[in-house]
Amino acid sequence: MKFEFSLDGFTTKTPPMLGLDISSTSIKLVEISEAGKDLFRVERYAIESLPKEAVNEGNIANMEQVADVLRHAWKEMGTRVKNVAMALPSSAVITKKILVPATLSGIELENQVESEANQVIPFSLDEVNLDFQILGPSPGSPNDVEVLLAAARKEKVEDRVAVAEAAGLKALVMDVESYATQGAYDRIAHLLPNGGAGQTVAIVDVGAQNMHINILHNNESVYLREHGFGGNQLNHEISRRYGMTSEEAELAKRKGTLPESYEIEVLRPYGETLAMEVGRAMQLFTTSTQYHKVDHILLAGGGAMIPGIDEVVAGRTSTSTMIANPFSNMAVGAKVRPQQLAADAPSLFVACGLAMRRFDAQ
Ligand SMILES: Nc1ncnc2c1ncn2[C@@H]1O[C@H](COP(=O)(O)OP(=O)(O)OP(=O)(O)O)[C@@H](O)[C@H]1O
Ligand SMILES: [Mg+2]
Image (cartoon, rainbow, N blue to C red; front, side, top):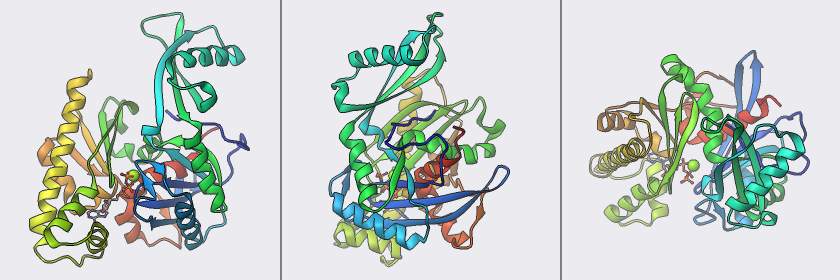
């Protein structure tokens, strides 16, 4: 499933485009090209830290700071591509399923969707960007089709477009983060039994502020959730234990300059907590939906960079668990160091999904 809020100047044939993930701690840019039939190549990527609070819960709080970091990251990356595919945080988007008569098409369908949207969306339609996707015939009502509506407040879309513009870039696609992960997932689905067919697969992206969960059944998204848990908790624990600010903690953690006790006394318990949170989230899913179990967990986000975390999660949840590396089957361009890419891959999950948007059939 893919969403797209239409943006000015969007053309039907998608030109080269970078994936741009503006998250709470950093900016991630990924450029992927086609290297052959069904073969892709990671040409370049960049990850650049954002100042604290520049982005909060997906909201761009300081446009200037974010644009500065983006401009810098783009320069460092050394690409000529200025078009970007971006995403809104799932929390900024309202989705609703509605039914419309199956006989409608074109402008009639659009009008019907708009009038239904007017009733289910708690904002005036002037204030939102609206998108919809036909899901298929309605199981309960044979003369209707199910349509998935997505609405985002215009200013959320405009803020992101403006940040890209201020950095000299042009936003061509505005996706939703949870759906953007699908493009990255498609690159690793072949590693699952039957390519994921008939399986229930949980993509668990452990970021800094949030754990973003997208559960797929039969390779289609059936459940989205965010839980307020992530790397910030680890920083908090480090600052408490070693008397540092959370910025110092983040830096020390990344540079590996923490005292020897860190691994056993702080990181390991944090990994256990993370695994427990994942377990709880899976339980919430199985108890609140028709699905009785999760067959596979794919770990993404910065939280997946903790050494051995896949085994800890697998042990705690009794579910096969894999660190998501969407680039594992891609060629690597001359500008990319393969080892560094492998290490950074989980946190590039969303950016990779967005970078793959340029290959969508139009
Ligand atoms: N090697 C590591 N060990 C432990 N934690 C790490 C490691 N590398 C990164 N992290 C943590 O991962 C988090 C960043 O991950 P990521 O880039 O996925 O977050 P984000 O996308 O900015 O956050 P969010 O999705 O919540 O907006 C930070 O909290 C960082 O400290
Ligand atoms: Mg993230």
